[in-house]
Image 1: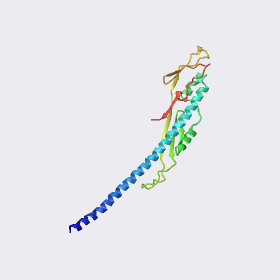
Image 2: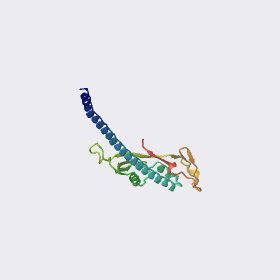
Image 3: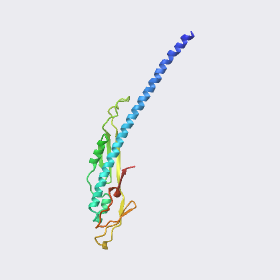
Image 4: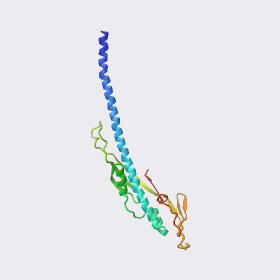
Length: 198
């Protein structure tokens, strides 16, 4: 009788074991689904960040080129350095960078001249998982990149003559600009900082 009871106890434990293993497998697949979704969101965020930064950097370069073209006309510096001049849209660069990161843009727009906001959507879906209805879902992320002017200058006196340019100060560095020798000039990264909005 003891041996029969022993086998009966073993038979009762087997369904519990199966249930526990099935539960553990379900949890493993659930964690995998969460991981897939998190990775897709991360891909979307990477694409959005790269796209927004690319658009802002392209605009920064346009502003820097405009400043260089007008370096001998200091009266035009202030609006250029403050981004208060018209420039061409840089959303084309945002689209390029999104595509390089396996995504596309649902939206891209300048907020004035000195920032860009983009919405990126991943090209690849989350994929097969145990969560119904998620197979075709794509991640969407929104990012804004900002252009910060770094330079300031004191306007020159009207009686100083036409052969004098203001001293340009950019993040603690002074640029003494000589009209007759314009070989050492600040670059785009000296004039403007580009970063993601906080």
